[in-house]
Image (cartoon, rainbow, N blue to C red; front, side, top):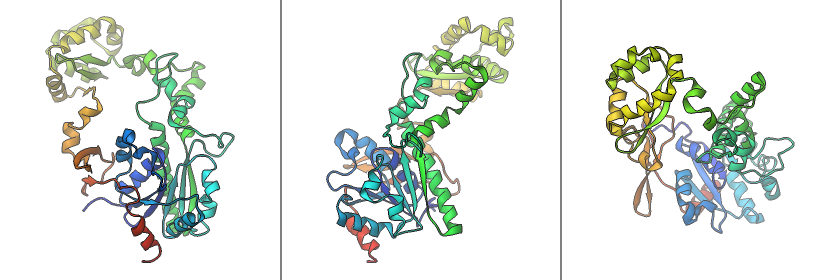
Length: 379
């Protein structure tokens, strides 16, 4: 049986671009009926040809209805759907849901049990009136500072703050649904993008307060030295690919030497313990590179993995489509797009005793408008 713990829960997604759709996708993949509410004139802006990959990755397993929420008759039709729904998730800009009269105060008048989740730039407070987008949140929250080299703050390679805030929003939704089982009442939960970035900076905030020194960005620290691991670096293989190897303790170090036939290194007085190996990095890392470049990436991965040495390839998104683990563990979903079969990653959580979701489909604009309207009117 397919794992669908949220089956029977109806979700309205008044979302666009990333944050709202990402939260809706999580709920849809967990079995909820997710109804994407879109403007009749074009729908979600990611439906355009340039952003199709983003649209398909975030809007699978949903239904789409078109409603002009700015029109009073459209709002009335929307509230009919609200009355028979469990959750509403939105990520519109500051003040928009109030202007449209679809804010929590308005919708709970027709459905007191609604769980209403807002994903905003900021939680209530002095900045709540400000709009915010992902890259700005990464900059403002310190993540870009920690990611880029000194003097060049750099965003992560995906909209991680949008997705993180949406994930915390989903946690809030699930907790609110659990509370509703006890009280019969819905509630309003808000997830903040800036607060998500700040939450992820907790370690570095603590380190600054303890030491009085602003933490160095990751590129300035160096991979190994920031973890105090003697080998925690990228190396090129004979076929010009890159792998990352981690020797974090004596067990890993000895296994690494055994796997590559470097027995003399195990008895070298300069390499007898972790601290000495850290001090030897200036000559040790080039020596490791010389040993590694004798192997193709696949061969090196096999021999080090067999010996229990942590190793991973440095992949591109293209590599993930054919990754042995993803392909053979049920982690890739099949999605039909214009007659082509694409694969997308499944949720990174599962119930081992239940079947994984195998196929998914993204809706055409307004595809389910009539169906949802009939159900909402008791038809």
